[in-house]
Amino acid sequence: MTRFLSESLDAREPYFRRGISKLESANGHPAADIRITGEIKSLSHGKLSQLNLDPRDTTSYELYQALNERIKNDDRNLTRTLRTLAATQISAEADPVEGMVLAIKKYSDDLRCFAIKSSRLRSVLRDLSPKKTMRTLGYRSLDSMLKHESPVLILAAASITESEGWQKKLKDHYKKLKPTDFEDKSISILYPKGKSWDKLASKTVIESKHNFISFKELGAIIFFPLEQKLVPEGAVTASLCLALHEVNEIRASSSFLKFNLVKADFGSLVASISDGVPLLTSTLIDKPMPWHLIHRYYAKISGSIKDEIFEPYLEMEDLVWHPIEKTLAKIEPSFEFWKGANYLGQADGGGGGKPVSFNIIDSALNLCNKLSYENRIVSYFQQSLWHELLLRYLSHENVERSLLLEMQPQLAEESIIS
Image 1: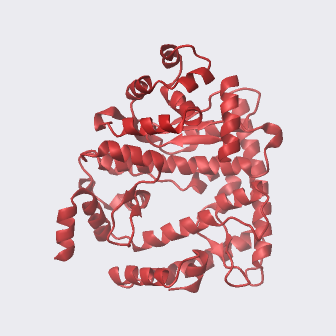
Image 2: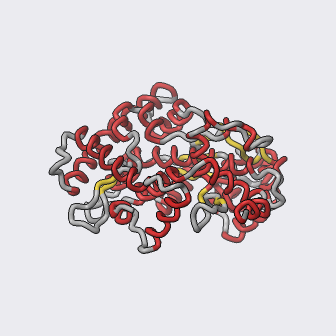
Image 3: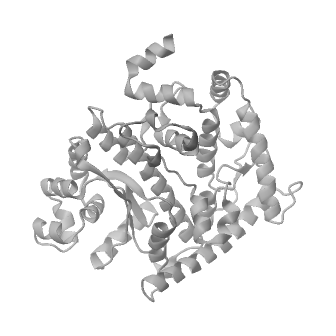
């Protein structure tokens, strides 16, 4: 196992080393850890050359500053492109958030998802009667609100205004949902406006540091406006990147729900994905594996796998995953530089410190938060590197065993023992 991986992932030793040894042994010792380290070094050198830096003597600090300048220029280009898109198709306001909504709809290859039916969600809201939301949105009666507002937007407002007790009741209602309460639809990308929404937006942006909220169980992303005079450099790129990331998460959660349609606890699974990333029992590593890794694995090799493995509920067409950098480059060509860089990093020259991340989300967040070299964010790089490493160890056989463990634990355990 390479020292670069251990230090980059800030791994606990000797546990990380033992885990890699287990993965190597289970897969016939492919030396994936050494291969990915060499690949990262080679690709990172290519990125350095694109930045007009010499890979032989560029310090980590110099690289960090160069990446800051790169994302700053790209963010300006993106903001200009989004404003132009909004002004051309919506209004003369040239709102970059309007541009984000249009860009996601226009440039995302596939926005299909599996989500709660609007009629069923409206029924849930009627039962729960979100009174604070009703007052916030300016309605005197629940019937009037349900008649004039999208149920997705009502739930979005309720997630901000209602109490923890109300939120708990919502999760209890989710646990009662059945597969027939869901349908195939397009991911909703919404941007509500008005005085009531402006107040909710201010509260959300201040508390979450994001200008959108997403709901995997609803297949929806709701944007809020950015205060035009106060938008820091990098914020537009960070916001769009995180929203595109959520699009992938919604796709993965949709395939997870379809895969589990026959489960008796389907409703509980709905409640669990509304709170976080769905997990899958795995014999490959000593802890549950994020479902979206399985989703990404099959999206990557979809051309060589037959539909029968997931039939009758989940089809290979449901396993869509697009790198956010790829979609960004479609929207604004200057982002070509960031393609394939999400798991790239350069070790700290001093040894033992955090690496410098080439991940675009890290770079955008570092810029918009004006973080120094010492306080730089590398978490998205670390997550991407860990997931990329695991993907190298996934094989059709051990993935199928994990799927079998999820669906038929007894049969899977028997196959492991035999």
